[in-house]
Image 1 (cartoon, helix red, strand yellow):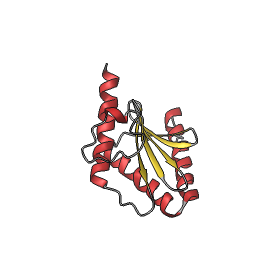
Image 2 (cartoon, one colour):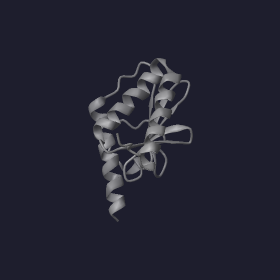
Image 3 (cartoon, rainbow, N blue to C red):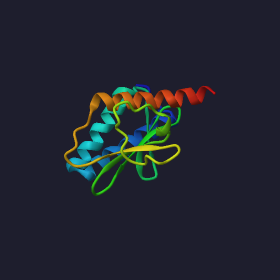
Image 4 (cartoon, rainbow, N blue to C red):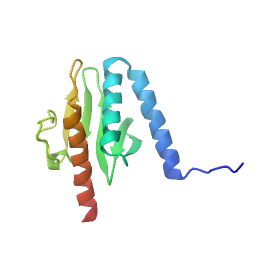
Amino acid sequence: MATVKKSAAATGNDEAAHHIDRRIAELGGWRGETLSQIRALIKEAVPDVVEEWKWNNPVWSSNGILCTGESYKAAVKTTFAKGASVPDPAGLFNSSLDGNVRRAIDFREGDTLDKKALKALFKAAAEVNKAGAKK
């Protein structure tokens, strides 16, 4: 039987996925569940998304960084690298609103995720990155 060698990119993605799985398990409770749901929505919205592990946090990329997933005692934060350029018709951004480039969403215990609006936001962030990559 032939052995299939993984490319460096696939290996890195597998390693990042392992780190993210571990972070979700370590967090447990509402924070782990929230991060897990966010991750699933990103993958649904942007099927070609690349999972990375940077700055000791999950990072999702498509033609550049889409967003990060940070966890704090009172919140799970999703920071959009180019959020100021991403249309947000549902008004999900609730953090880092005064920055010139990024925007974030803080999810707190008991919050309900607006799955449809979040998926639209992730898709829009991917489109912003794609448009920037073409320039």
